[in-house]
Image (cartoon, rainbow, N blue to C red; front, side, top):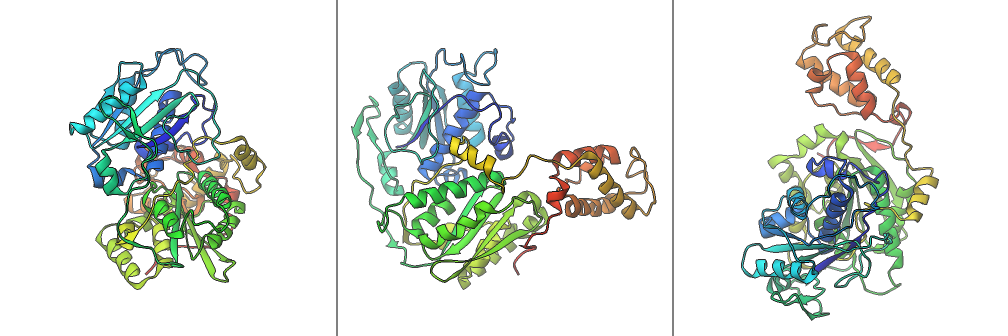
Length: 490
C-alpha cells in the first residue's frame, strides 16, 4: 500500500500551474478547487508509488478502481468554492478515472468511516473486479500543510484534508518489488502489519560508477526549475557517505516512475556529487523559449565534463515528427547498442521515445521517494521565484509588435508592399503551401507554433495577430541570443 499525504483544500486564488490538467488530458483549466485537489492528490499518489499512466496500462491494463468516501459540510470557507452544489463523490471518481484513463469500477462510498472505503476497495481486488484500487477520503477541517518535503511514510497522516492510498494484492506487491507501507485485512480494513519490510528483488545490482542518464520534465519551464530545486534540496539532505540512494536507483526512478512532459532536462553523470554540482547552474538560467535544444557544459568535481540538454516540446513539433515511429525506435536502439548515452539524452529531450526498461534489463533497482510535482508552492519557494532574477516575467508581446512583425512576413510571402489589417490571406493569393511557409516564419520570428487550421480560423492580419499575441512571449525575450543546438541527432 502506498499513500499520499492529505492535501489542503484551499488553493491560491491563482493556482501555480492552472493549465496542468488541461494540458495533460484536455480538462478545463477552471476546475472546482476540490476537484483539482483530488486530481493533484491522485497524481502525487502515483508518483509516490512509482507508477505512470503508461506503466499502469502495460502492467495492469489500466484496470484501476476508484473508491471515494463521503464528505459533509466541508465547503464553507474553501478558497475558490462557489455557491453551487459541491461535486458529488461519484463525480470525483469519474473525474479521476477519466483523467488517468482507468477502466476499473468507480464507487462512491456511503459510509462515513474511512475503513469502509478501504474494505470495499480491498474486496474488489480479491473478487477480481480490478487489479489496483485507489481509495480516497476527506477530513473535516482543512488546514494548510508544508509542501517542501517528499511524502512521509505512514498509514494516515494527522492533518485534515484530502488523502488517498493505492492498494494491490500482497502477492503482486512482492512480485513487483514494491516498497510496502502496510498490509490490510480486506474484510475489515484492519492494519495487519505496520512494517512488513522491503520485498526481495531479483536481478544483479547496477554496476558501481556506471554513468547514468538523469531526466526531469514538467509542464512549464518554471515548474521544471522548481523540480530541479527540490531535487537539489533532497540530495543535500542525504546523510554524507550513507548508502541511502544510488545513482542507478535515482536514474531509474526519474526515467520510469515519472510522467514525461513537455519541458525536459537531461544529463549524463557518474555520481550523485557530479549530479548536484551540474544541476546548480540551471537554477540561474533565464527562461527563454527556443525552437531548439539549449546545451550547457559544466566541469564536474570529478573532473568529467557534463553536458546538460534542455528543451520544450511545444516548440519542436517538426523534430518530434521525425523522431516518431519505427525510424525513431531504430535510432535509439542503435545509440543504446553503441553506449552513446549523451546522444540518447539529447534524443529524449527532443521528444524521442526511449525504452528505459531495455536499458536496465536484469538490473536490481529500487524506486526512491523523491520530491513530487510542485502543484503547491511553499512560502520559501514563492519568495525564491519572486526574488530570482532568472524567473520569467509575466510579459507578452504587444499586439502592435506582433501585428507589425506578422505584416512583414505576409508582405514578403505574398509579394505585396502593403496589406490591410482585415484583408484575407487566401483572397490575397495565399494557399496551403504558402500557409506552411507562413507558419514556419511565425515560429522562427515569434516563437509560436501555430497549427495549420489557424490559417482558416484567423485568415486576416488582425485576427491572426490577436491569437499570436496571446500565445507569444515578449519579443525581447524571444529575440535573445542563446547557445542551443537545433535539429536531431544523425
